[in-house]
Each structure stands twice: as C-alpha cells, then as structure tokens.
Image (cartoon, rainbow, N blue to C red; front, side, top):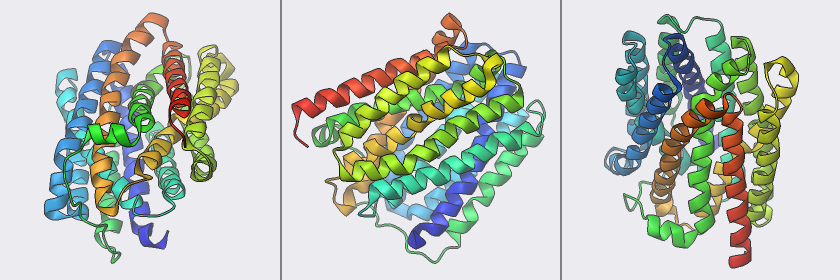
Length: 373
C-alpha cells in the first residue's frame, strides 16, 4: 500500500472529478430536453473513445512512461469537460464525451497495470476500486450543490481532474515496469480465461448502462436531485462494502464461484429495484446498495482471474485486451439502455442489468463444468 499511496491519492481526486462530470452531463442533457436516444448516442460515442484508447495507450506508455501519459490524459479529460460547458449541442457532446472516454480508459489502463504488479492482486484491486468509488460518491454530492445548467460545475470538475495530477507526478515512488509488448491479443486472452473474456464484456454492459442512465433513471423514478445523488451513493457504497470481501474470497477459492454468486445477487437486487419507485425512497436505496455490491466488483474479479497466470511484462497487454472487451460492452450498454428505458420507463434500466447478470452467472457456472479450477 505504501508503494502505491501517491497513485491512490491521485485516483481519489480524479474519480471525484469524474463523478461530478458524469452526474452533471446527464442532468444537463435532461435540462436541455434531449431525448433518451440522444443521451444513448452520446454514451455510445464516449464508449467508442474508451475502446479506441486500448489500441493507442500501450504504445504511448512504452514510448514515454506511465506518469507522463497519465498526466496527458488528465489534461484531455479537463479539456473535454470545459468544452461541454461552452457548447450545449448533442452532436458536439458526442465528440467531447468521446475524447473523455478515450482519456479515462487510458487512465484506467495505467492505474490497473500499476496495481496488478502485486502478488495479492485480488486484494490490491479491491483497495483500488474502494478508493475510486469513494471519490465517485463525493462527485454527485458536490454537483448537487450547484446548477448543471450553468458552467460552474463543469469548471469544478475540470479543476478536480487537474489537481489529481499532482500526487502521482510529484511522487518519488518507482513507476511500474514498461510493457515488453504493446497491443492486445484477444485470442490469447480467450485461451487464458474464457470466463474473464465474456465476463469483462458483460461487466462493461452493466456498468455503462448504469453510469450513463443512473441519473436519468433516478429522475424518471421520481427522485429529487439530492435523492438521485443518494441513490447513486447507495449503489457505490454497496460496491465499496462488497469489494474487499469478494476480492479476498476470490483469492482463496475458485474465482468463477464468486462470479456465479455475484450474478445471482445482481439478478435479485435489480429485479427488486425495477419494482420500486421514488415514493419508496428508502427501499430504493437499500435495493441500490444490494445491486451496487456486484455492479462494479465483478470487473475486479474478471481482471484478477485474467492476470492469474501472467508474467510481469504482460500486465499492460492483458489490461489492454480487457479494456477492449470492456469498451465493447461499454458501447453496447447505453445503446441497450436507451431503448430499454424508452420501452419500459424507469424500470427498463434495472431490468436490463438483471438480464446481463443472468448471462454473467450462467456462463461462469457453465465454465466451472467445462474446465477444472
């Protein structure tokens, strides 16, 4: 933990800025009167940028090192947020959010390859996710104090992102090993871990559907802006509470069993959410907490499983391949969530999540039968 303390501080600050930005872009889009289709397209282009980063970032890391690339991507995220505050047009926002997706994916790749240089990667990845989610909880509460229809909150988000550069840039701690290979190998990743391959894609669908439509879902369910922030916080707190137990459990038993358990929890919690409305606010928070216990932690389990047999020089290559798969899921998530919410209203989002959790648990269970631990 001491070796990555500066990285963890940077992650916390950056994810706070990320939380502000992700919250206000949804509220601003609703305030501008854009349709669910417009919002889903903006989310899809964000995800396309996220995926494209997987092809480019490893080359940048090998050429200039982790810290410089991380700083450049933070600057790109800040520029994207400020551009959104200047131009309120859905087509312009597709470009701006695409740039943000490109930069945040590269940032995740750097952070995760850094964290994975540790024997207890299940536990360390849980620490990383815990810190990241703590920051993302703070973001919506900061945003709830302002007005998404003005430029102030966009500027605040950009400032937070820029501040996040300092701890890691000024740290004397050694950087992780430069990758011995760049690019990605999806075929090799499939052979290494089919369940991580499929699970990472489904985790992307689940996370992106929630990330891009959580505020929309909350408002359509009848919650106030503070209520929406509370609901998002409840989901994130659920992820934080489950991150350590699931990470440690997956270090000691077959990780695929943990995947099956997580999928079952996700199905039950999301079906419960779909039956609730803003009138039963406390119950919705409890259901969100239960769903959050698996919405984000399943990705960490996938990553740990894929890296179990990796050599030190392969971590960036594996992270790149996982980011491609996750990015494809992140593209699909908003494109599926938009029609789901247009068809079923607010319950469409949790129902979509429940379906994907069922696929996640079902495939992990099938792989347990097909291959020994």
